[in-house]
Amino acid sequence: MKRIYDDERMLEAGFIGGTLSKDFGNARETEIAKKIFADLHLPEDKILGLKQEHTDTIISITTEAELSEYKKQAKHIADAWLIGLNNIGAMILTADCVPLFLWDESGKYIGLAHCGWRGIVKKLPQKLARLIKEKDKEAKLIAYIGPHIEKCCFEVKEDVASQFSPESIIKKEDKIFVDLTKEIVLQLMAEGVDPLKIKRGCHCTCTCCNEQDFFSYRRTKQKDGLMSFIYKIGR
Ligand SMILES: [Zn+2]
Image (cartoon, rainbow, N blue to C red; front, side):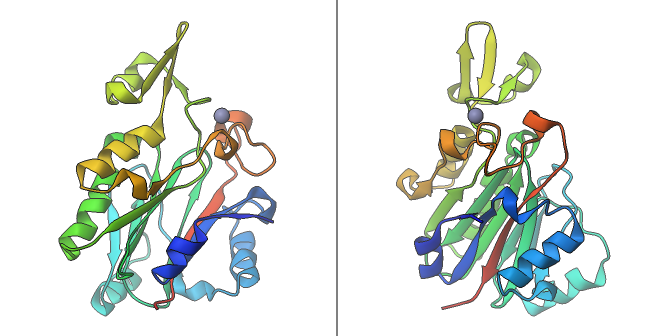
């Protein structure tokens, strides 16, 4: 079983996290999600969930007050997290969409976003970066763009392509592909993130190409989900 993640840099800042390969099972199933947390020795009641709807809404849990507010509501429609309390974690599910991990070097905050093309067009990556910067002007951001459908496979029609920056569009013969990684990098750079501090995937972390490790909605048309999680241990 594989955890595709960014071990050292995350640990240095006092977090663990990553995207779990498909042999952990379909994390959309509650029982499987529970088993995953048990296998990772993480307390499941400390790992928060949300209902993803391709929004640009970010749930911020950086104070005890925000945590108790979160617990009061039964349903949370959102697509990203900002965690700033120790011993609290959060999860998202993806199958082709991008799991974006974004944190500050000093270890105060870590964000995790479910970025489908719709969320990216709504500038969710940029908004998450901005939110961290608002909380801490001095924050030096580090990003890890997790496994997702890469430019090799993300073919779209003109109506989708037209919503992206020209730099993120690849035209091959009569086909159009979007480079979601590129678009996220551009948005993070617009918030002052050093591109050298953004770790990216490649062909081997394309969810559509790499059948062995990932679920892909584009490949199978099935709604199996990979889990990405973060957990703030503090340092
Ligand atoms: Zn691919």
